[in-house]
Length: 362
Image 1 (cartoon, rainbow, N blue to C red):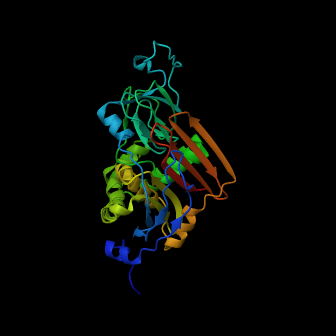
Image 2 (cartoon, rainbow, N blue to C red):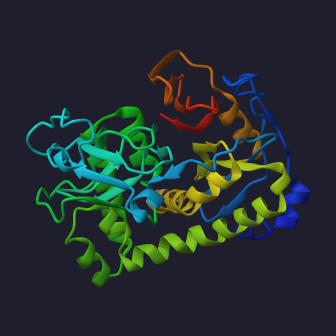
Image 3 (cartoon, rainbow, N blue to C red):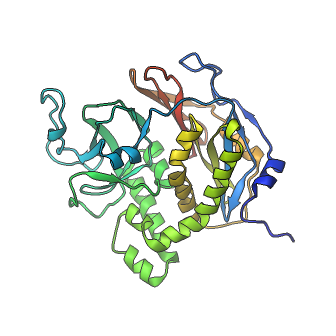
């Protein structure tokens, strides 16, 4: 019996690539531009994690957008506990925060002259406890203080380590945690997924690492453990490098996202408006997928490209709901028979296109 290699070489991928045109988008964007057509490429695998690169026939200019990591690193974006924002007021002191911090509420100010993208699943550390962003959204340049919907990913601390927050730049929350925040919108389910991941990783760790991990209830703290980071990188780095090779090799084909499978089952898709925007998030995303694979029991299921096509192509929804900030963004939630999907559409001048699409199994 032939042994399956942990991941495919680029040459094999080029030879085996089975492209499928997907029709998950309307033909024309709100700005009057032709919307992209997406194609799924042959998979790259490592252990029980499989990713399917997705390419598009057209992309959009996303250079002006700022990411959370970039904004926090430069100091242009400040995230604080609710009740700690009075020094950040812009308009004649008319923003009156409530007294006291709240578990599911933070306040953000974008002092940059660029619009800021926030993705559900991004983690901020500090304050009274670490939080995960609960919704995709866009924050306009030079914003007034914005209320953020967040979920706690550090259930046993309510003591401030510092007044503001930093970005956990090495990894996003893994898909099971992101799903609990985005689709379930349930703090108890977020805590349950955080605890499950921490316990599974702790049980597989060496005694010294397990003891160290037991000292914290922080999801970010567990993922920052050196042994956990090594295990995540063992899965993530080969896939990260292979996908970067795909992006270089297919630059004119516009790699814009992935479909993700664990144990042969499709679980997630992340699609972006451009290759450069995907590249800015890719190191965090691939590690989140690797963490998900490490916390799931392994079996021999092997997905194929047709299954990835079916997963990404099915956007038939039983229910659709939209939330709009006029002139800034619209977030649309689609609920199907066995999936939930979210589309973040930029409405700023000169945009009118989808910045990010996330789809997850229920």
